Image (spheres, rainbow, N blue to C red):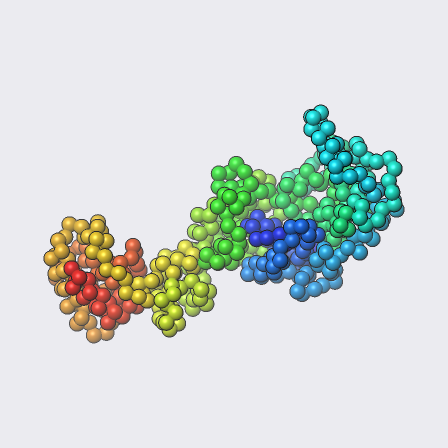
Length: 479
């Protein structure tokens, strides 16, 4: 049987990293088995629908390289792929349950149901609507809720992550299938859609585990074969004691993308957040993830979110791209991350800057703060110079003299290259009897006034002779 998986998000806002992991695993499983990955938009909750959210979902999946085989934009044999366009399909399946006596119209008012709930709360007993099922129900028509008529029993099933499970009648109820507005609930719609689309593996968050007996009852009442069920444990907050939420510092995937996190790093991190292939390997391409993925390596406990690890992975991927594809490949992704002053410089110059700074980047957004001095003269700050731990014991006259000697030496370099600069700097150390930490710190700070920079010969080579000497002269004159 062909493996068919699906990702079925609701277009209710930003894309959380937990949502994305729920797309990665079904994608990997489908591709590992030469199967099919379907994108379906569950947009029946019209009160929470957010304009533009569907496009954000599609854009995020495309950015990560998770290309769906059927779904919005590309179509397929099992459309429509928006639940709001599938109402007739749900009504057809609902009628099967009505005809078999397993669904009924519910005329009970919301106010009366609230009274039932309140009474159960006072009696300290669980609220189960089936205990209040009306004895006389009208013929169902849109405008009335349609409920499933449960026949509580013991259900046993196997979860591919959680193992063998069992639940009794105490968790089964007459759940709503079709709401008053004519739209189906998730509890009913996803079962119909998965059956219609031939989904073989249903992957979703572990929070749905408690509802599984109700789903199994509907599968049974409709005469459907159960798909394989895969419950994905929560991504936990950094504290490890609760499910990760935005209040815990986790940003949306879009925010990470805008902050300069690479798609490869995000995919790599989320795929390994709760899964591993049994090795010590940490860096995976998409192709390697597909080859290595298996359901039995998904852990059955929550995985703690660690943004530090994500940023470390991002730095590794920045270097991997340059090492394997060249700095130009990384440069193509940096267009929006340079400081504003870089806009007047040619691509070739910015590529040179990137080539000496990339191995210090954690995210691409670091470019805006780490490279400013390559595009505009820094503000001279003698206090900053004097507070440097290697320079604080030198007087202003000593600093001035050391700068003037350096300027004279560097001025005589005819071919301004990294090698010639390195030789001149080494000779300066001998001529001035200075320590590298002192001399190099003075020159580095004078041309950049930055907390750190690439190796000094590289920095001077990219800045160029005129700019480097002009900045050194300015600081000497300022002193």
